[in-house]
Length: 418
Image (cartoon, rainbow, N blue to C red; front, side):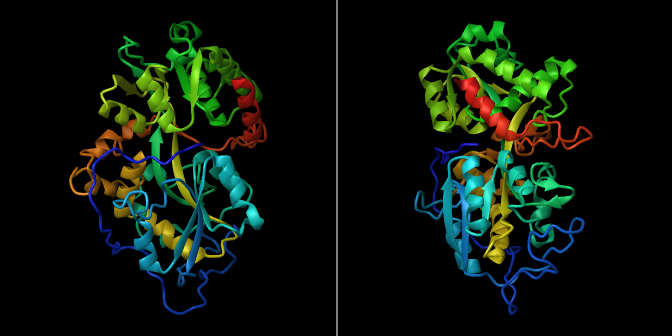
């Protein structure tokens, strides 16, 4: 996944972030290590076995890998600062390293045997790679005070929970909708066939767009799941060779109709504004920005559903500052911080309690009805999302090692683009 920093184009005023009374409080005394019967990340036993039961004093430092915009300290916009209040509350100095892609995050997490960084804000196309390789530690949800306030569909999602074991705390999410310019695409699409069916897509040849990532192969698989039942696709991320080949063939056929792929949200906004692009996949942020600038666009969830992304704070299995990382994960899911991140970055918060702040549309939160715009509490919306998860050779079911690994997805994506 590739993300740029998303700053909501709204007028805001300064926010004094008050530490949440339910936040994690460092315990006094002890050696400073998380108290546990086994080393962090040992993963032995069943769920909950050998996990820390309390958080010790912070180690004074925290080194994390982030999507740019996930650790704001007021230097970009003074209204958005959740780093300094965290440092004041915990004594953990935050050192963040922005990454541009999920692949880069995975590489960084493995530096120095995994001990350089304490954690990462990984997207679903990286999380299972990190879990499968033993790069991240199982966590104890009971040490996250706001855990039960996280939306139920994000408490144990398959992209960060394996065998009942939790490998992180969900942070924010969004769906990959279908967007079009209403002044060009006169009939509102209800299906992804407008970009995948050769006969229909040809009408907009050179002006289609798609997300520039190997994970986009799953969008093709999701379409085929509905239109080619003979393939037997049950999960767009768990594809056998024939299923994978069909998705690749569909994208290869689509390629001549693609004018521009997009990776950075700003590129897609510019392309829709100029008319270089008229229809394709998008995030909610781009839709709202374009509408705010009176660009004639509309978006929908097609009949086949859609893919989507959800980010997770994960702790390194070899973290040097595990107490600080636990405190950071707890901090990042509090309503106050969730509200700041959601508005500054342009995403739906994992903790819906943030909506009590966001939807006011006054004070620091200037987007009225934010959570309505981002469909935060719309179950029918997120039930239609097949959230990104790393494709692995292990299909996760009785098929065993019959599925196509992400490394092959990467190779084929390069070939598709040409």
